[in-house]
Length: 159
Image (cartoon, rainbow, N blue to C red; front, top):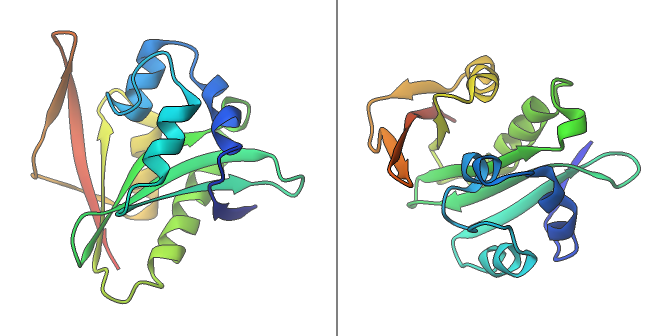
């Protein structure tokens, strides 16, 4: 598998991975809204401090998606990590994160990579743990959607 730069056509490939509003919120928070729209995803991909990547297999099929957001001169944040539902549990997420960390390592000023994961997303948390991410006490510790509190872990790994 290979991590490649996002292209507009990839948006239509990842939208079907999210079957309902909760799936969409778990992935993208309020960033894209519901129902998901290709235009919103494509527009975000053009932001100055954001890079989108997809993980493609040997047949060029999209199997994973990730957003890298440069938070400061020394911090890169992993956001909106997603794996094709038919590939979940097969190590694709771990490969996606490791490939992203390898790409980030080419930015010599980046010292720390951070992310947030909802506490209910146990599988993703285990994946991040296995790579070496550590839980921190940074804020926020939760998000609120439609009056419901969604607790978060903030995590980081130093390069």
